[in-house]
Length: 165
Length: 92
Image (cartoon, rainbow over all chains, first blue to last red; front, side, top):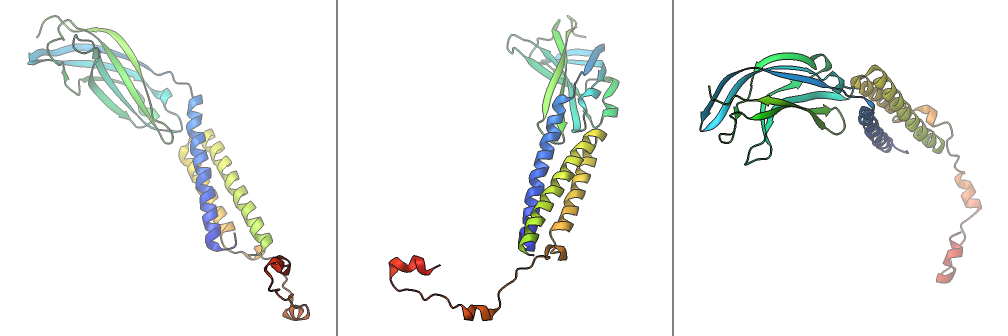
């Protein structure tokens, strides 16, 4: 503490150490927020269902979700996506991302949107006729400090028609 | 900066940073604003820098009182004895 440089160095070191603790506390405080997100997805209609070597489906979704409880003071943004998940003889789990969104703040976290699939729904092969599948809303919470975490809501009971159209 | 000043400056620095950190977390959590927390803490760090880093006059209220050089002449150092085993005593 005898010189200008020594004091500046001591202050900086202590300040940054304390900052690390502050960030750790902020990250820890997220554990005490209760999260109860909800989602509901309907398939309004299937626009197209064809096979071009592989089965491909075009459909229109009605997505109704409330992810507001994921936002705390330490949340930077939330990435959410809807995936179709189904089983085929070759793969025990197929996941096809149909639509996604980056939610920047709490005000945009409760939404209802009617949209066609943003990304193409293509199977590996010809397994989609009459296929039962789940629509799953996945989300990744990106905090300002701390560990990123992900969770999902699985909505079962969707099925595709038996014939191409 | 004298010895008392150095002790004081270290304590003042740590206390200021700890207080600003605690206030920042509490206010930030209460207002649910990460930005507010960071601004309060940054303000605390700047304040602590201004108070503790420059050599302010109030850190020099207890200057060391050195003896006058004439005192050293009145009490000359003991002569260093050449024998190695007695060197320890000579250092006193």
